[in-house]
Image (cartoon, rainbow, N blue to C red; front, top):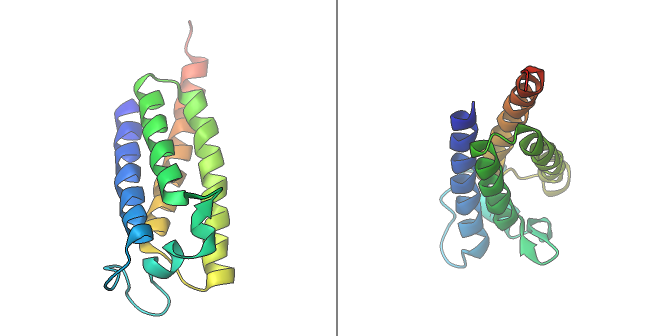
Length: 134
């Protein structure tokens, strides 16, 4: 299980890195500007793309890195706690995209899928690890 969680953490770092690149892109069209409903540039340049002055994508990269590191150490309970926080925040951001901005970010939706999987898998791993005799 830890290798799957580590792989998901690496994928999360990559996707968050792509979103961070969009955050700092100043010229040219966004490669994920598909149509008026799907545009990462609009989402990543909105005021919701910052948390305390830090790009949300950078926070995501750090979170995925830390969860991958903790999964490597088999600290599934801590990974689960972090994944739940990340999932809650990702769901909030999905609400912002849907109901406030009216535009979706492909990278954000992929990240939501990754954090959802990490939450489910780390919950299962935490339950199994807790049931094993010491």
